[in-house]
Image (tube, rainbow, N blue to C red):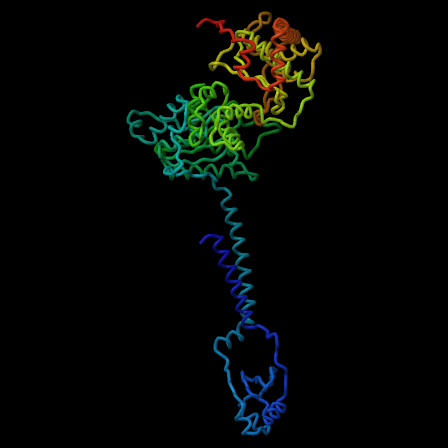
Length: 615
């Protein structure tokens, strides 16, 4: 019987007891009036009495032709007849009276005798019982404090995940398939003297499917799967985390073969002794216990630890050494082929219109993680439902992409005619410079509808996924970033604060070109500056200069030179195509949004890219 049922049963028992007590001791609303025995004898002798009810030592008198009743007491240890005869009642008149005698029942007698004493005892017992139960419950919680809160997923669960449910990341699945084979057929490996890695570390940006991949390993191997977050080990009391680690590994060993999965292991696995103002004793004790348990695995336990993190750089070196996490599986953002596969998986159960092309969606979503793609289709479904549609259109999907990237439309953010004109020329400048340069990504959409913090946006996406970028591509991208500011200067001969974000992005890119990528002829192929980071907090606090003040001044000069050149290139392109710029801006003011086809009708097809580096 669960706690809720017990509480309901107890409640109804108490209600029943109260009702019984009320029934036994209820008070009559119209009690009979008191009378004397002499008055009773007089009424009998005058023939006024119709009925006489005798209850124990009490007599209730009912008169003829009257609704009134009277009560009186008879003498103790004597009968009704004896009492009335002694008082001189007329025998003939007395014989005419209807007499009923009601004796006290056993239940009523004992209830009247015992209940006044039993009820306080029962109430006291109930209070003591619940108080004791509450104390025991608190004690049991205290005893369970060191137990692991890990949740166990049964291998036969209905929502079991396998490798078929995960698109892309084929290399990662191949690596983890060895873990599955070991759990299924350990004898095959042992006969060849092979030992499977005791720990597998899944590394990748948020949303790329690390947790899903760990669940798929358990589902593929048909073994119990214990999962816990790294933050669930650490409590305010020292030693609790280490106790929970021991309990977790003991549970897994009893269910072996099994998989342990620790999500966000960097919560307890950060490098020891790197905290600000000293170490964190509880976190370090927890980490020490994890290290001990992993290194102390018995050969026949068949328990494998899988952990996930997006910050492998802050993990303790002892955690990553061979014998613990001796295999690292990197999961990156999906390429266009994988994005198509992921979209198909998340599109199951969603009524898509025939016009929806997964390839077009994948081309517009470079850099999207699996979680982002899932959210994209969900937002598209919400937008379609909001418009009372029966299916999800391609426009719903495109709108969802913009919502995921930039935020929802700010319909209440209204621009004046002048501001709208400035925004139109600003975004038209970005689009036109991107179109005129050979190594920039094609323009997919231009809009002056406010989304998030942006008053407008120009959406550019590559035709194919890029893994390497040249200096020329970066320089052209700098020109595109500064094209909005250049357009304001060319058309209005003044600039606005709308370009502040562009300037910040352009300056950051130019600095990376000089200090990180070595793409500068004057300073040469070198990197400058080492970033300092608080390992314990995971925050970057600054940059350590490993160069002189003179070099710092040269870096500033080169950054300024890159930005100025990019601005000059953008301004030159816009002045050369000022008529097209005006046409494009007027179209934006009129329609507020221009898609790729409409854009190319105004500016023409983009020139094919001639690679600066031959294949």
